[in-house]
Length: 283
Image (tube, rainbow, N blue to C red; front, side, top):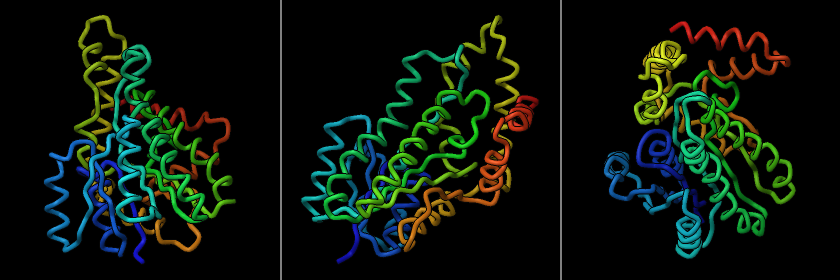
């Protein structure tokens, strides 16, 4: 019997590529997204690649939606072997620029959304003593950049959740892995929520305005450089984690990401890291 994989946030980018590549790898793939009307690109790619997807609505911010989707998948397919927590949202701004409400909304997607879906699938995997939880975090969950206070906080939280969960679930035959991409050529950069920070920066008394502008130039250059990965390259690493006989806890998706992760772990006091990251404020 084919293994069943569920991927969240598949309307574009990494989620779309992951759903298609998992299907090509032989998984029965449930591709979920909050708004089914945005599944056009997903359907076109699946048709082009000659694979079938079970496309289902799933809003990770809604407990009812999560429970309904997971229940439907188990009823339709009888099992769920792999969960890929991919749905996420970006937000730009530092503490003085962002309201608590904006930060809470970001955490609802990036952290509590992961919590909800993981919580919903674990009982079945634990009972089967088999399964994989793969969560797309970010290099921003390894090292925090300026004006990424809320985003990195949510990704650090996901890293902590999964690191804590991994040894426990291993006792039940369930593998937990975190995927850590760096810059990726997707719609993510354009879709980040920067409205509140930029509105504050437009005010004449905002001390962060010039620094935010310089940082945004640095980000755009990094995402447009040849060093940025494609969504398919990241998805290939996710498929590797889904199929490895003994999967790792962490998968960096590029040599650059592996280098950064290694550097962070070699600098326990963090002083060198602050200097290197701070250079990005020079634009």
